[in-house]
Amino acid sequence: MAQVLIRNLDDELVNAYRAAAKREGRSLEAQLREALWVMQPMTPERVAQLVAEADRIRAMTPNVPQTPSEDLIRADRDGFRDI
Image (cartoon, rainbow, N blue to C red; front, side):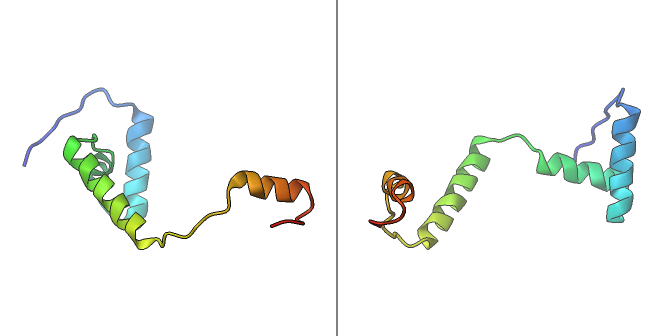
């Protein structure tokens, strides 16, 4: 595994991560490792994974006909007479 040294970090930032690590019951290093993992850059592979997950979730939703929004707005405006 790689190691990274980051210099000149703002003390307030480090203290915020240190406090978060304490709340989570883990080390500052583990807290920072998690933050880097969560905020990792979007690679083409990661985008493809997220799109595939969205497609999988979308496939679970039944294809139900929806009332056009203009009909709902019109019905609201006219007092719900013609829905």
